[in-house]
Image (cartoon, rainbow, N blue to C red; front, top):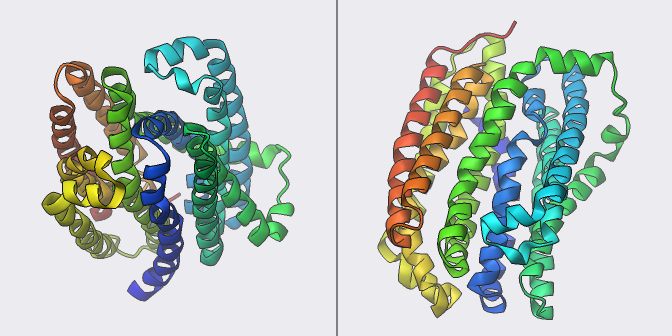
Length: 417
């Protein structure tokens, strides 16, 4: 059982390592080509993109992983694309109408024009995730890893090239969008035969898939948008209440710590959701698998946390330059919370795979409400370091509850109809 799970995970972790490793390898160069303000602009842009990505496909791209029949998975793939197009069009219209107001609220005038590319990046990311999940459904793990590597090459290559050209923050923004597009190109290269045979025309089967898995759209599509927004809120509030350089410090920590952990977690999570669904289908116990995976994740999470708590500020100053020592202090404070979030978020897919979507949705609404309240009260009224400390403590509490909920779903999984 463990070997069947570990094999795909190792392949995906290799892809995830290269996806994040390539941008990380060039990060010491990028921090010397771009200023903290440039990274601050990127943080706000990616916060907006990240807030929308979880809901853009209505979570039908997640449902295709747990569908028992492949034909239903293909119908869900088509449904996800059409939902994504509708959401993207709505988002583009909204940003076009209210661009000036949004930029004023975010205190980010440098994003004028670039704001309209947020829907492009969101749809590209959603399409990438749908394609990766379909490959996961078909157990084409090398294709998934290849897409991840393509994304890393796109981000690192474009950011570095345009940074050398000296065009400023636009190079970082273009690099982030290019990563999604490169991943899609890789998926089409690897899976062209399969994808060309998928009929994208809406049909009765598409409508049936939408109806049968509507709980994913109702309880996960809406609440995952709140989940994405919860993760984006700190960057957005920091941009409003503090200097763009402070946003840049926060963004670098996300890039070098949260980014790799999240990618590692997504690689494990995708396999875990399918593994749990298969155990539910066959009537096998889920709890032993849950405990085994979560224990391994905890070991992985402890290592970077200890390093950053012990040597965060001098390490950042040495690797990224003297201008980034403050980012090391942020990393030292955030390390425990990011580690707990990594384990809990990775295992939270167990709730979806066991059809506890209402509980999953309730937690995400609660997490959004608590995070928003904390930021509303403290952002701009305390120092940046104090705000980071309060947010870290809040995340520890929220994600401990998240993990317990996932654990209970593994103890009492719901069977599929």
